[in-house]
Length: 245
Image (cartoon, rainbow, N blue to C red; front, side, top):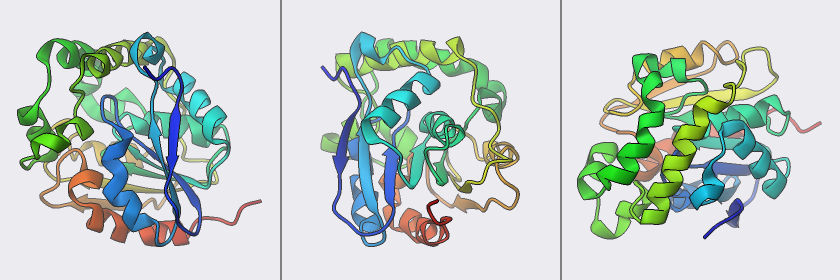
């Protein structure tokens, strides 16, 4: 059982970039994107704590990620990982954040934001499998790769339960609009968990002029299903990161 944040660095050149998964996903789901980004960056895969140790909201989890990784140049965050990334940005730990099907506050999800705690019981009692993975990906997922998209072991489902109920127990991060941080938003057109309409609400809380990209045919995990498209959109963003102070 993971009691702490675990990191896996991928060899590369350029800015050091954390890849933050969503509520119940594995950091290993970012491996294809990490391989492509390694041409212009130094990706770092992140795995969250498991079991009762997962009972942390995004702010507490961000502090653990920061303690494990130290200051990095940028973060690529999926789904709930966007809340963690926002806390890192507010702490001055990153100079750029890419949001992939993400949000930083529950209200960015519209009415669905009130349902975030329900993701815990759905993960534990619903026992996600290939059908759920296909729905999240908006395409069939090979059986061997299902665990990269949805929580499949009892420990992972229990971890999602604890983390989902921890989210509303802490204040959400403040808007990032006034921060000296470079952001980009990437959203799948067929994201059934974080609807495409949420991207505009998220972008309104970010620095003015933040680019918004809609990936046609992509679902909730574009980093997993569309790594080439994501790398193409992230490369100029990485190149435009402000210089380290």
